[in-house]
Each structure stands twice: as structure tokens, then as C-alpha cells.
Length: 268
Ligand SMILES: O=C(O)CCC(=O)C(=O)O
Ligand SMILES: [Fe+2]
Image 1 (cartoon, protein in one colour):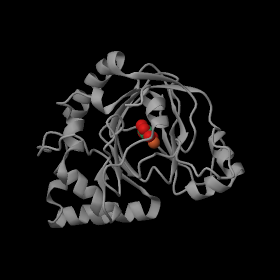
Image 2 (cartoon, rainbow, N blue to C red):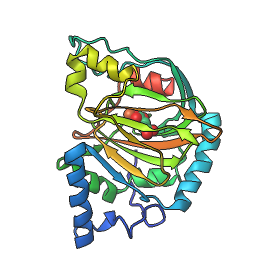
Image 3 (spheres, rainbow, N blue to C red):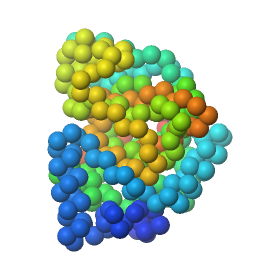
């Protein structure tokens, strides 16, 4: 995985989010605000982060590539994606069968603005400052960065990510549904309490669920490994498209084989 110097100007709304000048006053204000939000809710939501032209380009290409290069998943998932404690007192295969299409990192075109973003040092520096510690890009050959295309009826069921931090980029909004639902810092409780886990995964409203509708151009940074989340079923003819970029506090982080098989239909 090469991390070339990239020009962010055509991709990121740098006037609103000066991620390439984090030491200037506007950059510091951006970090301070994002950090406060992350500490409070474990979420950062930056609307209009991506330039509309880059969003359109990624949407068009993703629709085309997902048809021929995407993996069409049908099944259900372990909520901990294979990372649960072996002696946890909860049964973790509690979700329901669902469908979705995912493009792995090695199937995303090299000239995609998404790859420019993932490989950008300023974006990595921004994540480091927001979470307040070391952060490295995931080194997973398939899952470091992915594109999800959810058609009518598709969803992504409740889970905790394998990676510690995830950036989700909203690319195309469906007519209805496709909401990112999120229970901040719910992992410890979910590992201990079957009733709480089932209440969330079974679709009951949890008092702590945040719901983020898909708004193209938005960047969401969250701590996916400790916060249970899902994408609700998409409704209507327009698909939902999102991209995820994964990070860890240690270098060379990878997914496990369970998750690769689940999301990409292959182990490498
Ligand atoms: O598409 C999204 O909003 C989130 C996707 C997600 O949670 C994941 O890929 O792990
Ligand atoms: Fe996730």
C-alpha cells in the first residue's frame, strides 16, 4: 500500500475544513471542536467535507464497479466480527439475515478521490489529533478502505468494527432508510449483558441510539470497535453509497479471516 503525497484541494472542502493547515488558528479550532465532540459522543460529523464534484465522480464509478467487482453478501454476522472474548457470557450471533454489496480496497480504482483521501498525511494527522493518540491506517489488503453499495432492501446489521477508528464518507443518499444507527461506547455492556445486546440487535429502540441519515459529502469519524452500529434497511430505487477508511492505534492492523470472508467473500 503506497502513501503518496496527494493534493486534497479537488477532494476536500478546505475552506470549511482546513485539514492541511492544522497548526493555523482555523485548523486548531477545527481540531478543538472535533475533539470535544469525539470525547463527548465518540462521534465527529463534518457535513460538506467532500467537494460535490468528487462525490459525483465516486458515486458514478462505485455504481459501475460494484456491479462487476463488488461482493454480494447474504447472511448474518457475529456482532463482534470474531473479536469477542471467548468466555464472554453472551451469545453474539443475534442478528438477522441481510444483504449488501461491498467493494474491497483492491477493487477500488487507483485514481479514486477516496484513495487520495485515505493516503493523505493531513487526514491522518487530523484523526490523530482528534482521538488524541497514535493512529495508523489499517494495513488490511481488502478492508483498509471499502465502498458499500446498498440497494433497496439491503442493510448492514449491528456490529462492532474490528478496527478501532473508522471514517465513514457519505456518497449517495437513498430515498428512505440507510440510517447509520450508533450506540456510543456500548461494547463493555454488550459483552456482559445478553438482554441489552438482544434488545439492540432485535431492533428495540435503545435510549442511547444516535441516528445519522445519509447526507452526501459528510464525513463521520467514530470509534467503531467499542460502539455498536448498523445501517438500517435502504428503501427505494436509489442506492445508498458510503465508503469507510479504517484506523488503529498500532501499526499494521488487519481484519481477521472471518470478517474478510464475510465482507468480501475471500480471505485475502
Ligand atoms: O456505511 C456505513 O455508514 C457504515 C459501514 C460500517 O459500519 C462498516 O463497514 O463497518
Ligand atoms: Fe462498521
